[in-house]
Image (cartoon, rainbow, N blue to C red; front, side, top):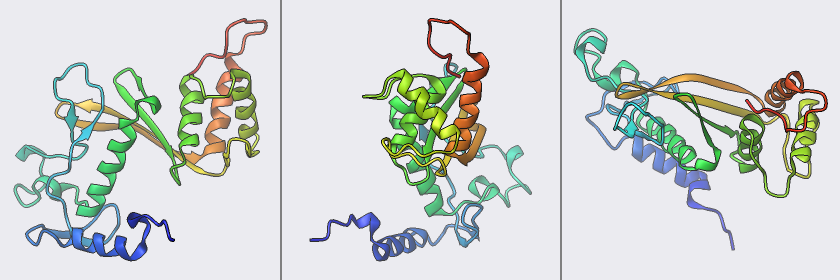
Length: 220
């Protein structure tokens, strides 16, 4: 018996994406900034949930939105989503994925007014868990602080951690987003191999190490 999920079936995915892209005949047809394809553009982007904003009661905000004529290009010709044209499926995909990541509070951290979330290409949770613990401090079940530092050093040297299932060459992403009035702004977006990022984190620990100190390493 084949246990393939519907979302993993290429034929089902292709049919759904084509249906979703053509579901609104009134949507403008433009080149998508994400896929590069000419397709129906989303007029309004769904809200992103889970970004902390101590200065506002609005908990759900859009990453892409235009609500004033002064923010639009060429007057009303480029209104709302047409200012930053993103296809309807790409809009659904990035908002759904980001909301899914932000919903897991164990792997979301706040630095000042910036909410930080990270993930690996392939979506294995160990990269997110290990990366969050290495960056911000924290515990990994069945892994002591000494074990974490040892694994961090191995990854910094470009060596795999077979016992954890971590490949230092795996592409890894770190996103920082912050509130900006009624919408969100991207503070930083980092992409590199997991090993390269952990090499920088390990160098941070080495620079802050104090000989004879009884306390553990100071996280970022």
